[in-house]
Image: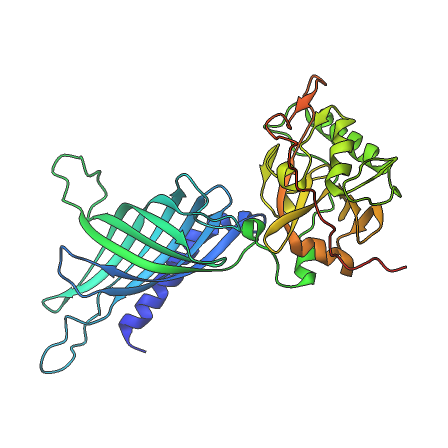
Length: 384
């Protein structure tokens, strides 16, 4: 193997380890891994394009770490008499990236969004037969555009400093500019809601938790957990009530959203009527079962349209009024029937009563006129 190729391979390994090691523990929780082939252009230097490869590990909040390396497509050190024993120009970078105004870096809900980045790098080339290597730091801006569920197109502009000084420092060297264009292929990680490709993986991603996290939600952890317990306690009282399309009460029967609306009304929360409207209230959660706790609402879609809603009950179960199940019942997500719900879950919301116990009106902006009610779900029927 040519010495430059070995050097480039070592640079990729080292820069990848340096960039991804700090997120090793985070990647086990919620992350997205992308492999990105790219081409760099150095207009100021008039150099030939450089081809490279990047690995990016991005978190759910839009922050990510990236390791990349590139190699000149042509070796400018090749003479007419043949190739010299020189190093083909190459470089490697380790960058921290922050998405602005969207979740462009990773996850099921990626959108178009700009991003900024900064990092350190190393490069090597030959000059008059002498190998010249250098370290540097750089910064830049870019944007990512999703082309599908697992592919992004991205472009960025980087300003590279040849010394570790600020661009505004006295006698600071002028930064060189380069452009990068490429594709990102999202190949794994915990995915921020990315659905699993096998039922075994999907079941493993369901968290058997019955507690609600604290933080931006009202009240202490005891209050929040008690709120979830009250919701589930109320829902449990109606197990066995038959399914009725358009039903909103125990006497007439429930459809899916009528059941959820009725249960939360008992806790002082007035929800809108349909699952599509309910998917717009409360606090948005990543559509990843690991981000969901007992008492949260989960919505399911068929043919690209939300048509069913359930309450996550903890311990890998949901409670809902289901047409395929005949009425209000618990369904285990680790069963063959549960796989249907795992596969079709697209939205998760957290709704908690007001900390003072007052009415929380989340339906005030939704008109009841011309409501298109939820249809039946098409999950496999439970075994008898």
